[in-house]
Image (cartoon, rainbow over the protein chains, first blue to last red):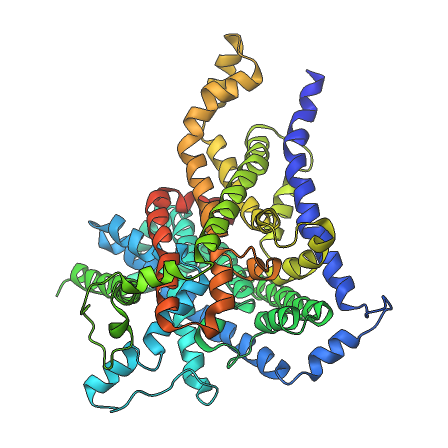
Length: 283
Length: 266
């Protein structure tokens, strides 16, 4: 039976090797790529070029702003969906399916869908015309209308990626024993109070997972923005793409990717810190 | 008005929020060129026509891109299962030192932005001869799908009683035989769901696919690189075609969605 001890390691080994090859190694390479010059010397040149670029400030501004606006909207909406699901009863499965459809929709496709709405001769303009607000098609997605373009991206992101938060929260709600809510009810807590005092605190681990995951994904927003506005609304992942593809400069592209990783790590740490202190305060 | 009616109204409104945009893009993709450019547009489809969608399929490179997408997604599915299922089985059946560290490693991979993988890999893949090949893209997509495959198969195998397997051993089956004859048939629906999920991840992924290819584009990569100089009918038909498989896939795996995320939480 001694040989048995090696079985789990043998089973796990291929995936570990694969992840080392496709996560650890590229991570190291990305760092090296960003701090090395063309001749292989150590330099901060890539970061300097990145920071001096015309699009850099806007890219940071819009990426962070998008995450700050989109993620809370998604969490609140997903929470509403998850709580609604409990109150529906019959027809629950149908709503569950419909609400999770966006889970299978790519960011590129979502961008194109909302392009159909916001484009010059799109549904939004047609609707506004029907209301008598405008006579002729208006441009909403140009660089002269960054606010509307931003809103279009927010709409597309909320439309597409709320489903993932919803699924995480529903899975989390299923883990909460019914007895807690029932006990609170027995002691006369209103539904509103039960939600704030029982459900929400017990849902904290799921909320944490959803917030961290969605924030990291929001910080690498790319195809939605490109489909809707090209480079009219610069974002970090988009800049990495342009520097790599259009300017053929992997060094600066890598610098952008390191920056995205850095912001993601900081955001994750902030969430962990905030949610931990909240949990402690609740105890 | 009772509470249930309020709930139901809200639920329907939120379902419409999901469905109406899909309906609109379907309407555009399944109408003629004139309706795509019509102003102002009605909500309801005017002329059903395959003009737009057949124009899309007729564009040079689209057929090849679809083929590439299918190859890449197929390879991703295969790799994710072959690498992920054994690890999932190990997590479900054995207690071993390092199991927790392994779980954390798996969860951590989900926290990496894709850019940090795709950019250095496309540089390195040039040296390895993997650049601009479906295999290279599939490897990166496998990295995205593998964490899910490990966690989901892990919970699947956990749900199959170990006693069944042990009974097979006492009846003279080897470990491998017992797995193939007893565990595999029971795990098959869940494994299929995992495979489908890996397929969807790959089918939808655009950033890495765009950076890692030049001529051997997958469909999203092809669409993205052609996006800003292609006519609207092409974009709408392409967007619609990307969505269709998603609708089917999510329907097929809907039962497993919560297992998928439920266990990822712990």
